Image 1 (cartoon, rainbow, N blue to C red):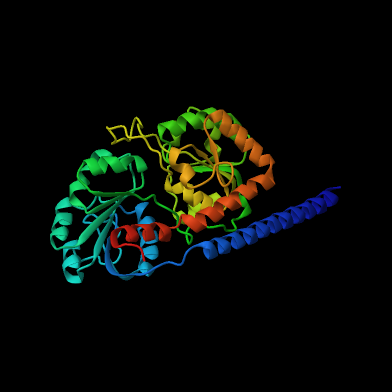
Image 2: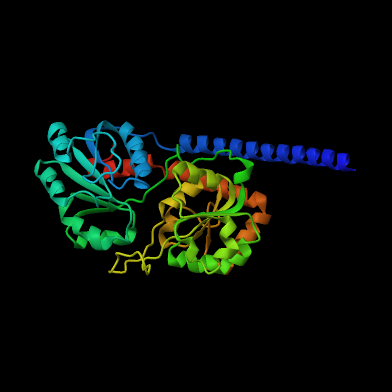
Length: 381
């Protein structure tokens, strides 16, 4: 009897492994075809005959990967790219010893682009402008730090913000050239891939436990406890239902882009939830500017070819079509209903995820965004 049970278990394991490998292979093949079609459907990338000085955020992780993504996307679009580092940069990229003013004077770039800008003194920006060099800043955390970033407006020629509701603020504060430019995703970092069976889950969420997220996850915790779940981020011990979900929470961990992409690819469904504009603990938004624009995770999740369930932001419809290439929820009850529906209806889930992958790959890369930026500054090519 024991021998027969062992043989049966071995045979069942082989069958399950074969089916899992086959399903994964089919998924990756479909994703690859979708990505190739998206690339074919994109307009060719132009090249500007200009020299650009790019200044990193100076914040280290998790901004470092964002710097790298932008640098790699920007380099093929311009004649020459010089890399500089903000004064307090923890991880130097490019020119670790040369000051920004030295680089500007030596190379005389046509444009200096600064990411985030919080670690770069504004008097440095002023001195670069007095050299006759145009300056631009790309803000990465609006509207949550507008008490600090509003002071940038008189110091830059161009301000690009990832939050549409912040455009008017910076214009009122003294910058004539303010433009809405969301962040995006880097296909080399976030893309469909195989992951080990041990990383496969029904549902995943990656992000910090801001209080609005805590409130929602406390309500859906009994449902999540019945599924294979992966939650990762800081502060999740705030949950009242923490003990219920603790075995499925990776606590107080910052995941690298590769780890994050692996977690997304291992999930059937990934939840996205934006932080609140009026968070009780971490908030430098005294004007109470509400967030309307999608966060970068919106693009990164869909770029991995998995189904995304996201809370509603009013500007989301300009990037995706809810119910077609992304799915939105408006309450904890609706989220539970949708998770249950799409876990059961596998083919429907996969088709929406594939359409989201196509839209993301075609429209929402950093190359797309930087083409927009350079077209605004230098004119279209």
